[in-house]
Image 1 (spheres, rainbow, N blue to C red):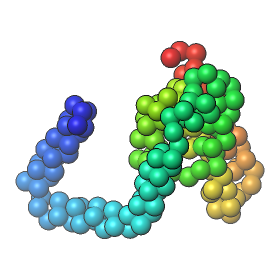
Image 2 (image 1 turned 120 degrees about the vertical axis):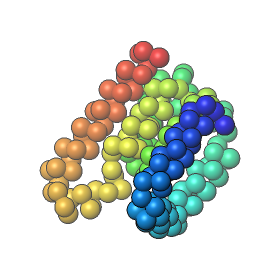
Image 3 (image 1 turned 45 degrees about the horizontal axis):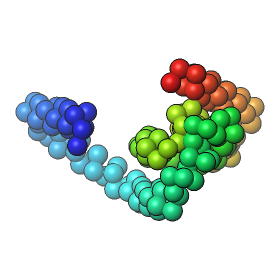
Image 4 (image 1 turned 45 degrees about the vertical axis):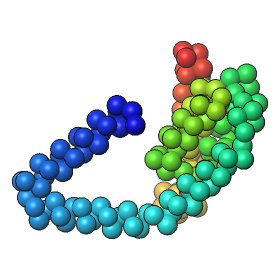
Amino acid sequence: MNISTIILYSMALIFLIISFLKDRDKTRKGIKKGFMSFKKILPMLIPMFLIVGVGLTYITPEMIQSVMGKDSGILGVLIGLVMGSIAFMPPFVTFPLGAELIQQGAGLAQVAALVTTLMGVGVVYMQVEIKHFGAASMIRRNMLAVFAAIAVALVVGVTL
């Protein structure tokens, strides 16, 4: 466990104790609501973690380096942009996945493109977004998100 994790857990515990001392009923209700929310998203989380875990088991570091490694250049960034635009993952899966890809040999710019599009581009949500906001709004938002991902990948690629 690294120091950041220890600090975050310690802060959460301290704030929980403070909340409990201030108002026991509200704290209990908050913990219960949080647990109920966790139970609702758990059926969605387990398959995601399994897919990512199994995927990273069969995808070797050599494969990652050849497709999204530092030497893959613009093609690797484009692959990251496309994969991130199509896939769906929540932030708490996306960021650890990005860290794991970097540890396995993926380039920083390529992972930046992947993570940024995973968080910003919503091909999976297009129908719902069109229904609620209209096609023009959905296209503008996704195009801006792709351009932002390209900009992030360029900045990361040039500076790091």
